[in-house]
Length: 410
Image (cartoon, rainbow, N blue to C red; front, side, top):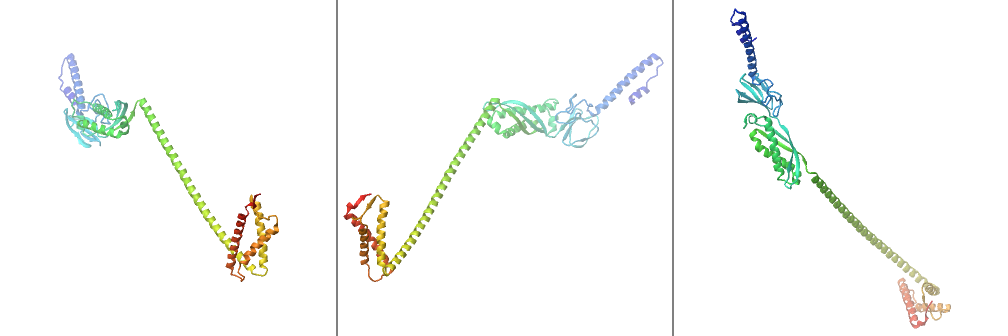
């Protein structure tokens, strides 16, 4: 029982009549109940929190909301500890008094009331999907995410044009501002620029939102376009364009490959031809060197043979041996001409082998008579052999000119 109720009971007047006393007792009991209820209600008014009736926005019947993670406002317990990244707005007698910073704070009971609790942390809000028309008249469906933070709790919670609007209104205003700004920015860009310059578009939207939300105590940190949905026909045409571009690049790469392959083949043929010609040149050089060396060796052998023949002729019975050898070669030469050719030059007495041998011996004797009787040096014998060869050839030519009838086809 409260002190006021006790005092009323204590100073209650004494009445003799039972009915009157009964009525007075009922009256005092009623007044005591009223006083007790008033005292309890007044005690609850001491923190101006109204128990759990009001949420963090000062609205009854709602718990939680944007700007705070608390479900109800804290009570006025004189000594309060404000958490980090939070700001508490205090009213005194229904009027803004001050802003509590993080840490230890003291409140005056009964007259100070915690009106708002604002979170200073970064908050993300989903921007609903909306339609926007680009500069080239393409309708797009876009949505995004807005990241912002309260930078001035006084402007957010107290400085309002209307009377104590809820913080959801500010959130709604920021969301609507983001949507309208995005539509305005999309209308200034083509579809290709919208798809390619998404970062530039996000930056423009953030600048536009910050210019308007500064008076609300809110700062937009960034805006991100999440999805862009063009019409199905536009998507199909984009796919066809990409396919055509891929086909074009494939054909270009294929032609470049064929061109490079042809160049490589031609270069290979060129190198092969050069190498073949160099090989043929080296072969001819080697062959010519071999032939020259063979001719030189053959000439040396011939000279040595002639020298030996000359020495042999100088010996006894050398002339007879040479005469016999010349006659044999003369006869063999006519025999080879008969086998190899179709035309044969024969002497007038071709049927008489003895006359042929005699003619050969007479030629040799003529050459032998022109020789110097004394034994010459080896070089003189070589010159004599060459002279004999030339005279023999000349005699055959003269004989052919004098007797053209001796030419007959075999």
